[in-house]
Image (cartoon, rainbow, N blue to C red; front, side, top):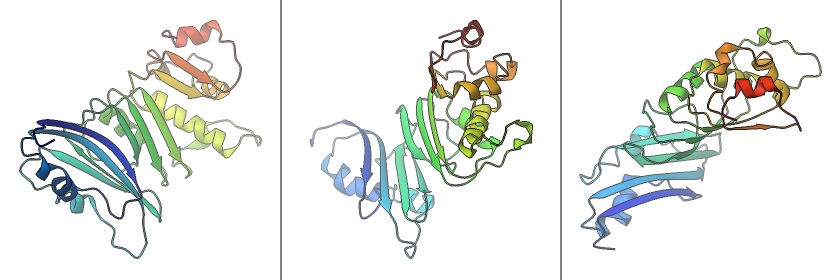
Length: 238
């Protein structure tokens, strides 16, 4: 591999003793490839952490990318909870289509090629978060969100009875922000409860949510449902 001139790496690593950073990449890869002139990479390292250990920051990781053979690089160090953290290092521009396990603490970068995004966070997400998502990921088609905290949104506008569960209400709020507050013109797949979808779209008449539904080619609902004519008019690409 000493004659390799171009290398593309997409790696997800778990349970290392330390995060993969610029120093590691230089010592383990670049020094063995003297003719390498193009290095495109995304590497995430998910590790268990000890609360007593110093928390590594984005700046700590970024400072390891000092070798002149690196082009522009970016990084994200996300602490998922008190015992687990994940570090993402990548070349810029980010040319891969998938980005997994990021939190709401992502840099002000435009990820022009990302179509699949998975977000995990333990803090309350406000509607500004979804605006940032729509701006940072203009090509987004598939979006997955795991968040266990109650959201800082006004729930008074939603009518629900005592039989509504917390998870149902949370899903409704997430759906509302994705389809109304954010601009996702390339959203191609949507998985949702049919009853929640009817509520958010006001029985498929609400214009504010219509714009993000026009490109959806696959609508997955939890219940066995025969779609009405109104559904197909609201989702013309089905």
